[in-house]
Image 1 (cartoon, rainbow, N blue to C red):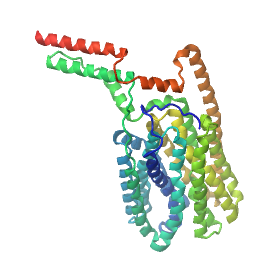
Image 2 (spheres, helix red, strand yellow):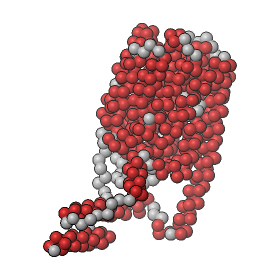
Image 3 (cartoon, rainbow, N blue to C red):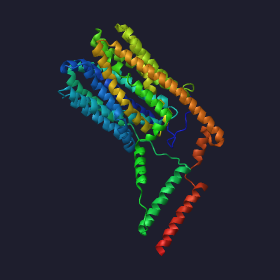
Image 4 (cartoon, rainbow, N blue to C red):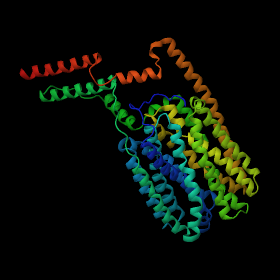
Length: 503
């Protein structure tokens, strides 16, 4: 196993213990967030007949749901920073249940857009981001494995929900199915209850203590001035604007847009999602279109899910190896390109056996991408900035997620054939994978160059990981010579004020 980068959380993650319960809860939340829009496609054919609408119109339900799930990322990140993962996930589970129960009473497609697309989609957003964020707080060395296991919840759910939805529809109709699905989604609240907040850092460095003492000195000075009626300078407009920006950055770090690796990841992923979800949305309808019965068409999603279920944890183990983890971005780029190649070859599968083979390879490629989707982002920006990063990435991705399935539906309506939709998705994903591979090569070269330059300018400033940990352990909150000037300044301020009071 390769040595991971030192944690930037201020404490050493446990890499186990209750963390495995957190992974289990995350697998449930992530599973519903990723799987529900796919499994919902089982109802498309019936809803088309009920409301007399086209492929592109019915595709907007899934598209709005996915876009809201990703577009709600910044709001979810802000809420997690403010309240923690547990209450946010529980509230999200309640919204999911309310959205689906309300959808059972809808009488128009517009109402379904609101209930299923927006309400349920936002509830899924409040499940996805907190589940991914909290894993980074519990794991460091085993983080790729933990992320792979958590992401494996998606294929497990898909393997279950796809045939379950068909069974519910056959026995209770689409309205009765929506009521039952609303109750099932409340299990997200149970998953959220497992997200126990991790303890505060036990080790503090001298730099952190200095900041605390500075705040205390400033606070004492303000109190002394107010008690002796000494006028205090009011803040300028520039200082107030600066304070406002600092408050915003406290919850959402916009300085990430100056981060080279983050921008490369963002552009590549925005392009990728233009063709990421559409093939899954239209896989079952495509099978029905070429004459395959409904249960066999739904079983294709189960095949995809079974392979995906194995691929995600296996990808996590491979990504955690000493050969792959130092260059994990290349592995991610290859996975995206491989995914696109599968879609380009899908039109060659004319019968059921061909679609089974496509589902196997698609499940493998899809699992590889999903297992590393958030791990690669955390690898670039670190654990402390990951909460903000995932929020900013998802809001940018929601535009292409929103447009992907409707564009695919429009191609199907225009040409009367599904192959153009698969070719479009495949070409886009191959392009995204190639872009990420080239730009990550450039980024790795630049990082190596900057590291060499730093060593040449100041060799003493470059520390090994073991030296960094030793110094962190030595920098405790106990007495140290670096804190003397702060103590002296604090004493001087107190003496000055005491002298003023005596006069």
